[in-house]
Length: 246
Ligand code: CA
Image 1 (tube, rainbow, N blue to C red):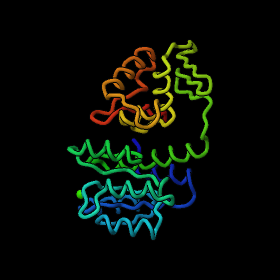
Image 2: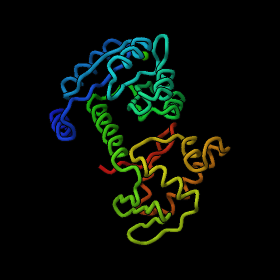
Image 3: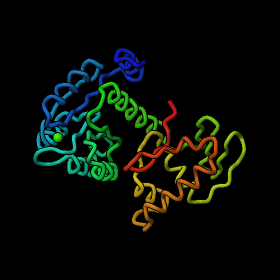
């Protein structure tokens, strides 16, 4: 079991300075719970209870990561997300959305606006802390190695430069589109992609491909991946994700 203490130790191992997390949430009890647990886990934590306050806190304190409730009084979470991604000084700040189960459409929009991940309420604090670490880890690995030549996940090896994929050492025959879908997903392991984002990754912006077409590509891809098909995970109601190798 991953205790909060081991989270803290792991965190200390990854970085020497404390990261600041801004919690944007209008429900007081959730805000207090998150604040308490973030401090306990070794983070600096700031709070904002509505959209205006959040934007001010972001400008003043430049948090390292933002936990963002979507349903807020005034400026809502999606609008905050959009503004942060448009502003050069915050375009790379990791955002984890806090959402209700009924907000799937908003989650899809938030991911397309550039949020990194989401957690559905009610959530366990342990799960949320793990997500925070995972997002920070993904961000830093992207910065360190922008161009992977070879992605190795168990038996699956993706040679991105040469468009070759092998499973257990055997090359598999993917179509161009299947390869592009796999490359996009595997290039950001653990990241949830909406169908629209997958289409964009494969074809470029504004290419008209239906959700159904993406599902067909994924089905074909999984079949060919055989014993490695489990790496391509369905995220119900949202899209797809490449299983994170941790
Ligand atoms: Ca709310």
